[in-house]
Length: 596
Image 1: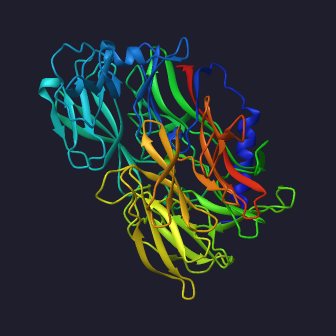
Image 2: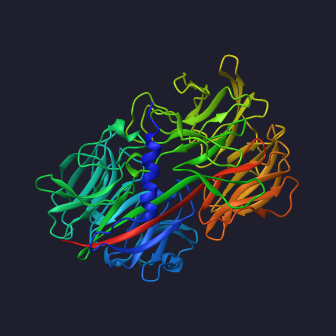
Image 3: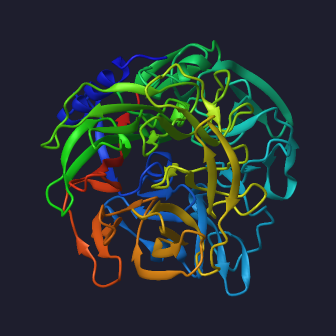
């Protein structure tokens, strides 16, 4: 089990972030976009236009957004340019944007001139263009076996690649293509393809790169590559799972002749990634993230920080402790480093103890849900027996676990074996059932169903699991909570495109009543007031998300908070006095530095 020193280190990193860091000479902040999402924000991919005037943001499961950097404003009209809808896009040399979208009955890739010849590319193609747009390279998102296609558009050749392509870039003259390939064992390699000679060569092995999509950049003289790595050495899968590990991405310059690599951009506790060379400048992205557990009176008011470096709070039955998830959203180790901790809370709603780790192990851990008698905790985890290299690695689970509450060394009992993006677990008030959401394996990604597992706590095991037969009007039940009497369930329904609905159903999923429609940006969460007369939820208010309350019988919602950060995942203390929530502030920055 890892020690709570992890929390202290992370808190210091956040303090350093808030206080600001020394800016190296020549570095210039070009653009900053705040995010009102949760885990989705840090993984957004940014591509700059060849003239560095435009920035294309491609979000987690969302459509592309185009910003004009001189004004800092989004420009959806330029992105659409004659299309009815744009799903994704990329820049292709000096010719402009290539977009995948819809125009009338057509749904395909459109070149910059929408009346030009059709691009015969797969819908899920991820591609790169040479500077003059005469050469392209693409691979299919999520596909490992189909390879990388490169060459002129009408003469594409399939180059077989052993692994997952995460980034690629042409040399300035377009004669060579470099690509980073993530291997299942956790290391990445840099390969070079010469499209005209139709040859492939491995240039560097044992790179400690992120398994997530990104970008690399070729220096103007084509003698080196700029690439984001966690360390100069090879990856260490054990370290990926430690919240305190210094594995934030840095921009390295890699010599193509010798393989030597040295850091050119770094900042403590922040990911620097997505390098691009434009003209005589190096551009890159930086994530700024500050998260905390905040607490406020149950009837609303100022949210005060309870503990830094935490998300998704859970109350103990006596209202004297709060459990939460902690660990940074490091792109090199996405979610692998998340563990859970607990702090004590006094009568004034202030922290009364140092954080203590309550759940720790390999891969992602969500916070503990205490059984009503306080003897057990249930939690979602991707627990793996050995340290896996990335989120979707073989050997990782995605399920609900049970454990004795006050013994971190007690056996973890796996309750389910079918999960896919399972959410937090919540106990029914009688302590006999667990409620949680999950996608259906083999079904449509992003569509959550609700499950109830009947428990036998005498022997600590699940008796049976049932999927609630929710009405067809409820599209995706991504968050749910029992009413205090256990007779009803409140549901946050993700309608898509930022639309949310709040429903109440009977405990068996029947008799739906919709309380309201509202706007949301992420898994906002909800909970009941202790007396069952209201539901607390998170919704978009202006540019941020805040907490609201709506009567159980319906009516006008009341805004409970007006915080400078984004407030989400509300949980009401069992004694009815407090609301604990996640407070999150994050932004994406674009930086520039003159090349040496």
